Image (cartoon, rainbow, N blue to C red; front, side):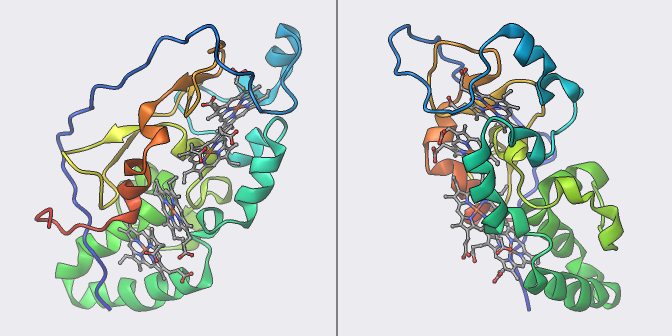
Length: 204
Ligand code: HEC
Ligand code: HEC
Ligand code: HEC
Ligand code: HEC
């Protein structure tokens, strides 16, 4: 079965991104388990990952336990391990692409949306499940919350620009920025369109 082809633009333009100034009378954070002191923060898992690497979703659990529990049940967490995907990718498309090399780009693109961190890590084929770090499999918390923009004019085909780091992008303009930065894109449906709208290599 033919699936869509990802639009890959090698030289990307990182869009201007409004790292808006935080206003001082924003509502209180609805997030529970807010660290109460700087020490607690320092001891938390927050700083135990190098800034240039993605953090596993389990590292968010301590402070965002509700969102974490929801995420575990979601198709995003399962988008690579899901048996329908596995069957289509490993049993149908991968063997078929060995016979028909014109399918290669399309097969590679599956991973861009279904396990984006693995896609960025290998930048080539995933030919066995062992290549995929289980903690980074699927569409993870950290992957979404480090999407700064998309390549090209329209979101679609998995054309995200995601840069890991200590500061997570989010929808609210809070007073503090010890751990997150406001991102307008995180409030817009275009964000979802990055992976949820399919375009072929001609952008159609
Ligand atoms: C598919 C991408 C995606 C994934 C996966 C994801 N998020 Fe989000 N998250 C968003 C977007 C977009 C918003 C803003 C819109 C909204 O609130 O629904 C958001 C909102 C939030 C917020 C602020 C709003 C609130 O409800 O408190 C927090 C905190 C958050 N996410 C943390 C997490 C954590 C922790 C995980 C993993 C356990 C996670 N997210 C997984 C995209 C994602
Ligand atoms: C542009 C991002 C993107 C690409 C590329 C992509 N997918 Fe998906 N895929 C999605 C999204 C989003 C969904 C869920 C919504 C939907 O069904 O459209 C999905 C759903 C699926 C499902 C349904 C899972 C289920 O549980 O029913 C399968 C199977 C699947 N994709 C396989 C593939 C394969 C194989 C490829 C490569 C040929 C591929 N996808 C490429 C984004 C993508
Ligand atoms: C030590 C506790 C802690 C950990 C661990 C943690 N967070 Fe947070 N996070 C918070 C708190 C508290 C806030 C509320 C905002 C504030 O006070 O600045 C927050 C806010 C956010 C927001 C901003 C929502 C918005 O727009 O305001 C996002 C997104 C977010 N966290 C994502 C994550 C992700 C993804 C992870 C895991 C990779 C993670 N967090 C790990 C405590 C934590
Ligand atoms: C990095 C790519 C990516 C982004 C960004 C993304 N998704 Fe997804 N989403 C997927 C993939 C891949 C699947 C398919 C998982 C599967 O079924 O295997 C999916 C599945 C889903 C599903 C389940 C669909 C179904 O038919 O079962 C929902 C609901 C969903 N996404 C909502 C959202 C929303 C809302 C946003 C924006 C806040 C979003 N997604 C952003 C990649 C993404």
